[in-house]
Length: 163
Image (cartoon, rainbow, N blue to C red):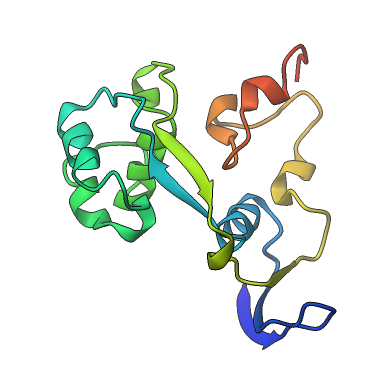
């Protein structure tokens, strides 16, 4: 996968646009969400079940998570990935999911239109990536709730569907 900086063509030519070839799967969709100006914040109305992480989150609750010290926030966390930032975001989106719990996310997504970066995400096939190659009866090898994209509640999306 390559990313190149090009020229934004169209009626609102306001600067460069990011073009990613082959980025129309879940990662590309999330990247597009972030480039659209959405940022993850700690939702101060929630309590994370990990008391150490909860205390750290409260230290800079006014700042987007992506602009904080991710190494500091992810210290001591354990999960299914060897990438500490991935483990951090997993535990923020689905606290203690690896232990079978279904706690609500502690993230709140806010859009800052001034942070919007005009972009175009290109791919070789329909958006969704590998999801289209799965058998009809298989939704994912992960628990369904782990497949949520930013700002999309999986349970609401699939309510009443057997897939």
